[in-house]
Image (tube, rainbow over all chains, first blue to last red; front, side):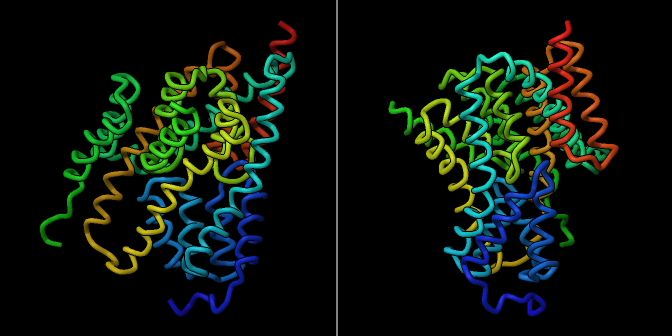
Length: 184
Length: 174
């Protein structure tokens, strides 16, 4: 823990640094930008701390990038730090999305946006497919994981159960399959 | 029920259920929005697509949905409801973590949740795909994007914008 350098970080600095991450991360990969900021650029976290925080972020609900900002901000400046980091992270994208969204809503019947959006939506689907495939990584090759992936998909998309119900069914099965082995 | 309360409740629930990130709740969000707020699948997919073009966390498209349903205040309510509950949970999880440290059960929970969230993401692809792939051209654009993202280091925003142009040209000249 002593390898990280967080003697004093101002709230302003925390906000500005996460604001930059939130503004430049076009096209995803935001976790990588956060790692560069936290571990390489400012050395606010050691690589070990970063991995631990990333794991918590992935285990807990919510967006990984936002959860990571919560944990890093909290570590550096407590609860107020968490708020500053998250606000910085989401502010640029929020403004961007709102401006385009307002334009889209006010001109949604316009010829041009109807011409361009189908292609954009198709590509966004391809992108989501690629991200899903990549995040799945090793899981596509393990029988246990594949079984859970397919069953979850069927319950959600084919049987059309609600998400709380899907989690209620799948979580106990998955936890049973991955229970710690006796020797631990 | 007041539309703001309804938005706050729906998106808080989605926030807490977003195990493994925002894309895991896409199909649930799509069906809630269709049934309770009258957002059809095409509008949903368009909002999602605009969100993919923006920098920052990838679910900021909820702002467009909130704006469409209840104006700027709606966008604000949705943003708070979608990001606050999960952030608070994570905040306390971080504190618990530093108190208890590693436990074999933590590994178990993470291993167990990962394939479920991947399954949910696959459902998200299916939900978005059903609304966005409706012609040979859109199918080809989706597949080319999939290939380019997996096989090259090209920036996704560039691919998406070019796909928008190509799709427009095809529609225009046919």
